[in-house]
Image 1 (cartoon, rainbow, N blue to C red):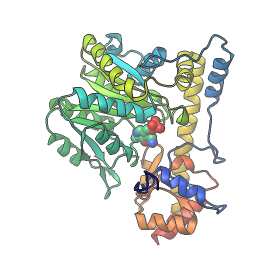
Image 2: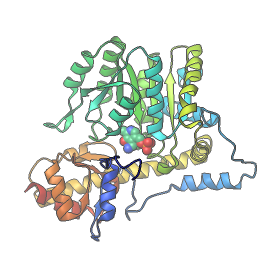
Image 3: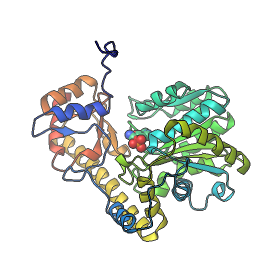
Image 4: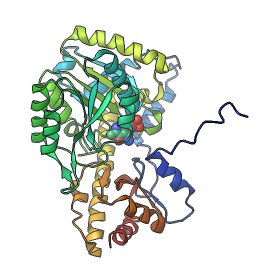
Length: 401
Ligand code: PMP
């Protein structure tokens, strides 16, 4: 018998498992609104033109070799990534108070940050929003942090539970870590306003709570990279410390290239260089050093004015298509007279709509309409097209009537 005979079957990942089920469905009308990956109007994955151009430049460069990167990754990529999220004129960068390491997309960057905090930070408790991306509690728990939640989403208003958020963070122990979605909160699509961010900042600084930003959608919320970075920059502008995990999966469409970054903003330059030395000790035994290709693409785009501008145009087009899908779905439900208030579909921000549909309604839509989504009622607007909106609206209508 196998020495592994007593290994039990693990459940599918709640998000990636949706695609597994979708792939098994033979219906021609099947629709995958589960995973958060951008699709074109034709329902196809998109490689940005600017990424193709950058790859061509890399291929044509005969001097390029396949040597290992340093433990912290590609230096140019790290510098440009910090600039992208913190701003070109960031005093923290100018004062060399920021250390940035290349990570394995957003997930890997969160994990490295979490491992660092578990080893070197005096507080082991991290507060994450309720609800949040399903991988967050797993990443932080496995790194050795103790996970607690703060109120975030109010099902009654399908908006932010701002009072609850302030109460819960106000009651958190001094120094606790707080995970904040920089923009386009996943799964709810609900973000604080800039005024609310300012109140959150004041409260957190007054209690010495440590902000850990997860920036997986910069540019995807508003269509502007700078506008979407405002919450992070607000916290850096006060001279305080924070962590930021960035992902280029969505905004540059580099999902499978696994390219991201972790920046730790410190109050002093000498602290930041000691922090970096410890980040290396986290990374070296985990994966030694990060992959070359994706970071080279990003650096090529970010350092060239023309490519950068082309990227912002392509990024805005993706954001705009998602916003259009929101309007179309809202209009289709209104046209059907579907009972209920569906205005949250056009109010929510980013890749996802938190529909308010419950798990029975979701199961019904999958069974009868071959529509795949997570059981919490989250749909990826990026997976929708003008052609498939009527089918989804029919399914939602049938599910709630
Ligand atoms: N954080 C959030 C909130 C996300 O939605 C995602 C992607 N679904 C990630 C982080 C990380 O994704 P990746 O590792 O692919 O960059």
